[in-house]
Length: 262
Ligand code: BTN
Image (cartoon, rainbow, N blue to C red; front, side, top):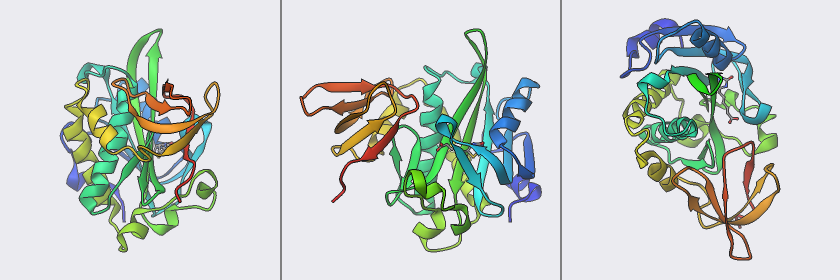
């Protein structure tokens, strides 16, 4: 059971969760966090919901969080507190910390470029970073993390895009969502010290799914198929085409898919 009192018992974790907003039911924790950030909420403010009815995913997709089943959390991050080289680093931080939290819970995790956390080839978590700007000045960012924890969090519709799974399925036991949130915040707290250093990209590349395999990247200016070679220092995907040419693909609204796993 996830409630405000239990959450407060583990908070804060480092700079995160000094201020908590807990909702039994909400449209989107990211939308709420963006609103709070506009209203001057402090760095590290944490928004958590038991159920999300209009959860947002990347590229305008939706993300479902049925009651009592998953983690829907958003953190308000202020640029004065972070040395972010690029805004894209926050997505890397979120995906990496989530993957590391999974490993501390006992399950191996990989990252499907750019920000899907995979367990046993199924998607178990996703990260959505949204930001507020004044002209070209970054005012605040919100890092939203959605995690499929119990079986009920994996809805049939999720499977449409990509195979989905949850921690309960892979660990073979029930998992306490509070423990998951605590582990994610701990990993975020540790890894956030590495923002701007390049170490995050290295750690991300170590966990990259499908390295050395043939993948397609769809949804950019054109679809591309080739061998996934790695990631550049800027977080672009390095894809070697059949001609030998290596493309560098920046993070946009693309979808990466393995071509053949047999
Ligand atoms: C994706 O894989 O497309 C990203 C999914 C991100 C979902 C999380 S759940 C908590 C936060 N609130 C939202 O509305 N979205 C993010």
